[in-house]
Image (cartoon, rainbow, N blue to C red; front, top):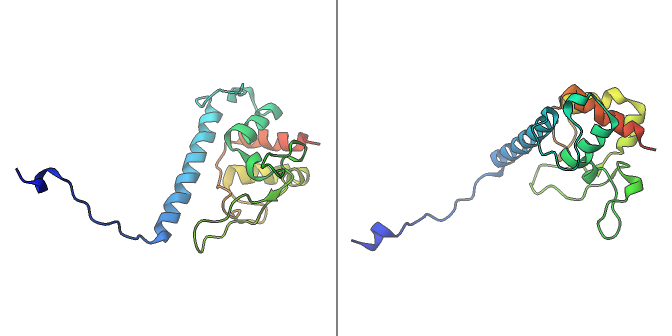
Length: 166
């Protein structure tokens, strides 16, 4: 027996172009989040934290659960204190993005918008964005905002929750 028969050799790693990688990553993130949101909407997801059942209809309680525990909107759309903790009374008031694009040529939004303000003007715009991934201007939001494809009940619950905030 020769050493070459036992030892596996590998070629040095090749540098791949980032373009296809970015596309695959973006689609993977969008698909993954969409799957989680659909699972939560169907009652098949993790029920930790007292998630309201999907069959309960659109509700403020369900909207809070979705924005904090599933879609995690609160993480980007809320300002943080000097220690990095979300400022609770400012949740969804918009904030500087906590990260920059890791990819050359793929610009990220510099700031996450104030969702309370958006919801106060147009609940329909929030629902449309969450169901179709298209914003009120007819375009997709800038990365890293994922192109959600929520069901109507979940999108309506989020809009109701955002409108309920002071």
